[in-house]
Length: 262
Image 1 (spheres, rainbow, N blue to C red):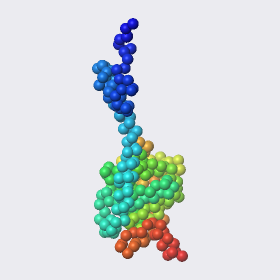
Image 2 (image 1 turned 90 degrees about the vertical axis):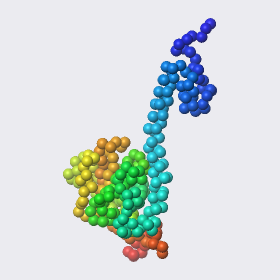
Image 3 (image 1 turned 90 degrees about the horizontal axis):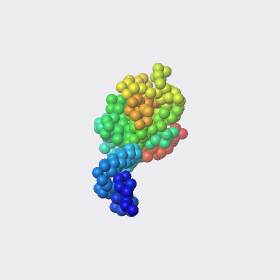
Image 4 (image 1 turned 120 degrees about the vertical axis):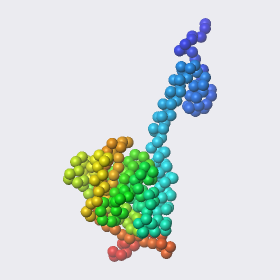
């Protein structure tokens, strides 16, 4: 009895032949099969690679930010050079500007100067035309929500009254989340954050008092809108320095502050 022809022909590439991986098998299949089935195999391989890249992109950007960007920034943050630049207000785009700590969200990220795409690959960036942390006015920081460390991924879960710390080379500034403005329009369920269009730059405009404004993309995985949250300054403490002019860890600054208050 003869072997049927056409679509019933056996696969010329068995699973035990050729490459040991799925990609290797597909490449061998593309090489050995007839033209029509070869195109179909190549198309399947292309779809597989696209799907793999879509799945892997957020993970690879997070690894890039946490391992290759944030660690060097943290080491550089308390260097004499950065302390000098901060003191003389000569911070350059991409320099570490402040460490943002949000205990309720388990966020601890070094914020760089600038909000360009390159700067924001660090995870979060300071709007250059806004005040420095602790100063009067509207300190504005933008952060990623789904990639590059996603420090503001759960910004909509932060409640009124929660604290945000901005640690600089010179001081530790504590902010407390306030309710969204009465005229903010589309508020989050907890009344702390609100949603605006991407071109509503007034959210980072000057304000009375010492305020902090955080901005991130909304909804997740989209650039369609912006999620906004605001906090007010409630306290500042100077950093403690060693004999070489390097800021000591934050916990030692906090301990020194307790001694001063006692």
